[in-house]
Amino acid sequence: MSGKTPAREDRRAVRSRKALSDAFVSLLCERPYAKISIQAIVDRADVGRSTFYEHFENKEQLMLWGHDHLKELILGGAGPASGGAPRLRFLGLYRHLAESGAMARALGRGPAGEIISGFLRDTLRRNLEAQVARPGTREQRMRLGLLAEAAAAGLVAVLWRWVRDGMPAAPEAMADFCDAYLERLFA
Image 1 (cartoon, rainbow, N blue to C red):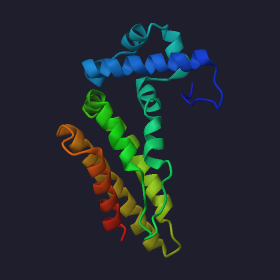
Image 2: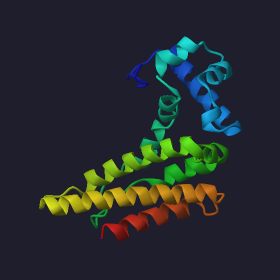
Image 3: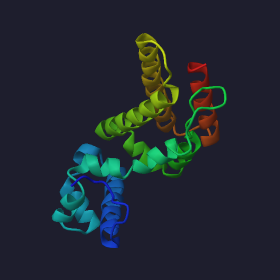
């Protein structure tokens, strides 16, 4: 299956996905990603193995499905500011991570961290590229694409550093920092 939720899905499927996601998150807070088996997830969720495969192909897809809401936290209402610098909504993301500190720390480690980092980098890069797309020469467009790539990588690095350091700054301060970072890069 694709792991994508149709616009209107039956309640049983929604409950199953939530149970699987909740089980995965609780296991991730207890042990490294590599030590979590699909059998452990279905046992914790109290569902059958076939239920897992009705909704997800593998645990990576489950993890990313459980974090699709991060896209909305970052991208909802995003768009260029009046000065032309791209805008993303960092405050919701940082607040979400602060509220779920143990989960955020668990997701930032090992293979899970690499998967989530790639997901966030790709999401940010695509959105930044779309926001800064301008007519121009091929070289100018390439430079903007490279800048979007570098900005996305930097933003993800800042986020994980904040998580690893124990979230020492308030989410509002981190969101302001990220906004200023983008303004300087794309000025």
